Length: 315
Length: 275
Image (cartoon, rainbow over all chains, first blue to last red; front, side, top):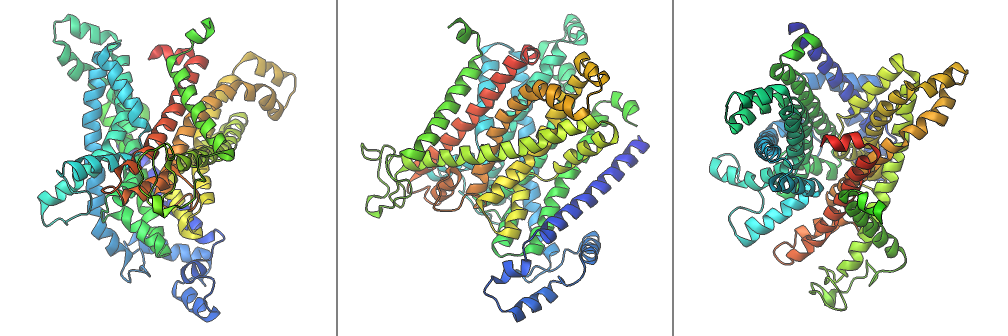
């Protein structure tokens, strides 16, 4: 198990390093001149030269990468030229909102998907199964940002139960939670549609196995067999998809934060793009890609915890 | 007629939706009820009428005409992105499968790695460097398709490589390239086409999201995503404007997903029986 962990952690670090190289290269080598992007093509050569010096663009590419990545390793992402403050501070302020949104949406996704998936599998080829599958086929086709708008129309414009957007800050936890309800539901419903299908088909596979029949034959109730015997054995593919979906949810927050005007990392990235703040965009893209990669790493570890049979095989 | 009845329902429903979408997109090239970008402020926020079937928007533009032009944008972008990413990805997958050993490993590691960059992140990087544009959106959507097709093509090709007829070709002294073109490609085509249909749906969703965020189609070109972002500021005033483009996206995505599922059931009956 230790060897397995060590191997996976080395792999994670190597991937993160590779991600940082790609982000740096795309932002710095593609034939766009950041100075012209920031100042515009009408700017004077003098102004361009000054900014080029300020941004450290005169150093060789490798030096610039090493300086940047050494800073990142210390938690120093440089200074945002549009906000005039360290990028790390901007990220630290907004990360809690984005992470709470992503985690609560993932939690809701799993709860909904397990309930719907188990229900559909236990009603295989009946109306309930058919209903869940139809709903899920529809859910997969709905863009999360449109679902958000429909939720706002219903719960904010019509019923006035919840705020249509904005965020009151963490000082009032109840108001903060209320502001996150619609964004969380919008993110989770679409993902739950996908996950419910996976749960259902994985459950159906396990329901066919001998031990399920044995468990039923010993006189255990059907629901006990479903939840205690079948579901735990059907979880491996579900966990894989949850890991991939966490990545979707995290990048989904970029869109959803813009729909609901939430001051998280997703909104920051758009402010940075419209301010031509390349250093901030670079740091944020790295953050998001790192979250995606780390989520996959956690899934790899979870497998082994869920399914002890994998321990011998993977180590 | 007998043949029709034996086709799965999802295939027929999907094909019908995709056909409707494609027809609307093609028709919009030669005819829309009104010019889709024509502004007529005097007639803004009109309800449905014989003149404007679904009414007009905040600038008095005809909603039906905009939806038709938006269908054209969606189909065109999805088509270019899927064909571009699909050809590169399929070529990579076939190459990896033919080369085998560490080349295959390297190509597949690269494909795994590229999953760290979802389309949205990639589009954001491109927009930050070049400014937002339609071309960036197409490149970003094509990019995410490359690893998907590489995996599908490689998995399908590896199976074909174990069959006797490829073995016989190899014994006859034919090169990996000529076997790939003559035997492998025709045998993986079905799997690639099924994947392409599903990726079309993904591409339509991605285009809508990018255009909604202002990273895709730029005004005055029509796009369902952009229509929704304009409608969002008018939710209290004209909620109906936020409904139609969303319904179009759902119908288009649903159509391609159902068509893809249906095609898979037809081409690979083992999978459908497992359901």
